[in-house]
Amino acid sequence: MTKAIREIDHLLTYVRDLDAAAATFRRMGFTLSPLSRIEAMGISNHLVLMRQGIPGFANYIELMSAHDRARLPPPMAKVLSGPEGIKSMVLGTEDAVAAQQAMLKHGFAAAPPVHVKREWKIAPEQSVFPEFDVLMPVAAPLAFNACRYFNVDLYLRPEWRVHANGAQRMTTVFAVADEPAAVARRYGDLFDASTRQSGEAVCTTPGQVDLAVMSSETAKRRFGLTVATAAGAGYLGYLVEVVSLDVLRSCLSDGKVPCRDLGGTICVDPADGFGNLIVFREQAET
Image 1: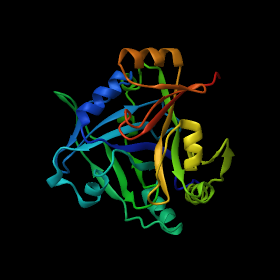
Image 2: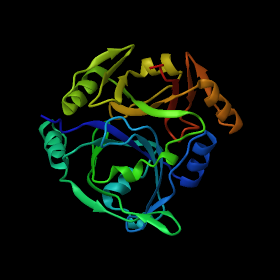
Image 3: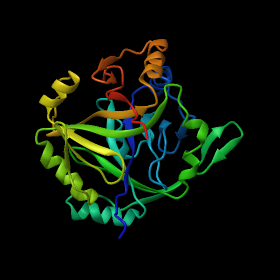
């Protein structure tokens, strides 16, 4: 039987100034998708698309801002406000109704999915029409929603997934919680997956991208960051695998992006990552 939730597909990241965020990510060596404006909702975004893992799904960071707050639907007005950073972990599903039922079963108040088809102008004379079922962000200590693609190939253009910094895939979403094991178990139940200890974090995944939950004390020891969790849990950032840390380091240096070398990884701190800790690790040889 196919699981209702198949993957952590992407991260909806709120940025106040989309142009500034896009410029910084380009200076980090990332390629961004063309600007997309959803005029009816007052929303704009760029995508940082990486290598697909499970067929039928994607792997990316979504940089989103509001260019017209008067048009924001109430759920999105709440999402696109407050501190910058990850506002929702977007889960990939092959059946949005089944995903909603799984959320309700595990105690998450999820509204029914909404079908969306919209125009995306990717060049002056070229438009594509993404179509998907979406569940709006669910209020939870680690907020999430879900998406069922009908034409995911529109997001998977090879030229959008080649990055000067050698980025390959987002492999881990980092979160901090007062009770890491309990939080990881709750999401593991939603994913129909087990949990496992990885270092000082408790991890679970519906597919290939991990949710790694750690204590604030662990975040301090591991990353040198003091993290407050107002609701008992919150997102910290994400890990991206790159081909070479030397290539990445050169990109960050050329782009004048502050970073830290930290135990076989390179980190861009939340102050420079628009609210997110961005950790880069060299991919293991296969």
